[in-house]
Image 1 (tube, rainbow, N blue to C red):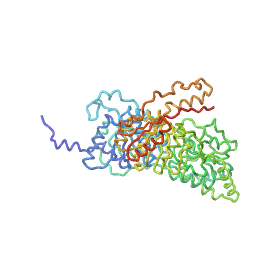
Image 2: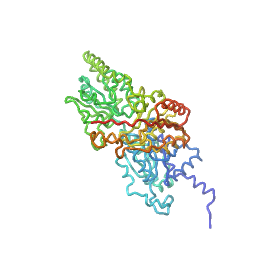
Image 3: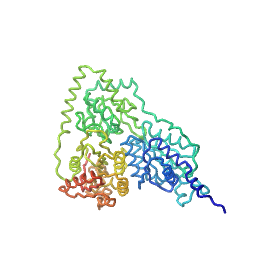
Image 4: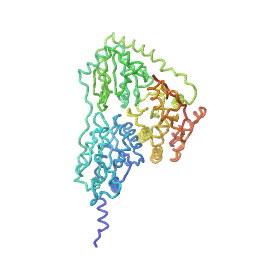
Length: 576
């Protein structure tokens, strides 16, 4: 019986495979990390990393994230913080299924993200990478990409070694083209482990396309309507995603004295001390407006709560101003402009300046005075009873925020207590509202910007959805100390409020604990972080709050992850 020499085996182990080429192509696109939840489809990639280590070759850093939801949230946070597309890889169809909630969040928030997944081996034997585990039969799907197709801009399965560069190039072109969003790539194990094709030294092909500039006639139309308006208003949710747009809106609203409403903001869009800051409720401004400029807002108001004036003109602006990936959305639009909102505001500012007359200058000054008088109550600290209400806790928490602090809010922090003066200092959940986003998001922000002090505000329900054991494991493993504040009202408060909004005089409104709304008995959430070396604090009485917050911020600033479990008051607002 003949045997293969040890030197030949070593040489064979160092031969380049498709997995090597795949990782190198990701590196060519600037990928720093791959957020991985590994499975039996990963051996070719693991072996490729070992080969790269022998060659001292730099590849994207593989990060082991022991739950797909956390991995997706981290990629989401890293993408928004760094401005760079991110890569997640999960285990075949089952891992993809766990990632779906995070994928929906990323899709609706236009996050440039490549979700890759292995594929159940195609062959039942006879080739490297073929099936060798009983799960390989049950895990195969007829159409694995069909699971995600409604949520991604592009999906594909790698089929041949010669394709790998072109496939990765197309994936990155898709996720970064306007508007950005996720793509899905399936990687069969047999293909990844196959010998690489002839080396391709070309740089990445398929450059992404950008949003076109607004046509001059459309810009003129928008400028004419705004110049003629006596009561214009701006509504935005997402404009502050780009710092340039944040500053552009600051300058534009100030110069033309147009109030700005931030409805369900996912970003810091305008400083809260800005003279044109008009709060968070469009129903206080839109019904009387004669021109409404909607900037990057998928839902600028609730139709039943905010009727438009008969003479109002509506301009919608954004990368996809009509949100055509939403099955139904019928907000009025007299002029829809596909544009980068920050750049559009700069062009609109110039167009308005060309139309300025002495009468319009006087109108702007008069409007500034009216807005100042109307928004004055927003700038006065309201009297809030001392107690563990969400608003009081938010107020005390906000006093610890500084220029380093970035707040991640998943349904909980009371926005009226938030002071925003700079971009990228506040993030809230995707409009899809898939719970469990915040824990991964906070870690992703900290990973991409270690200098930031990251504070995550969650309810007890969203904390449970965030896979806290996995998240705290990652925080310890990667040295990513964040502060998590749990506003623990022991309820699915959103479900309870939704029930009251539909049936304000119904039977459930008379019940303090309607079915399907209670999260009791409440676990000792603060103990979960202790298993990963973190500091857990519990607040049951208001007199304990200040000391707990002080200890928490000292600990996180010292490099330790912290969870504060605050047993807040369970209060529900009845709406009609």
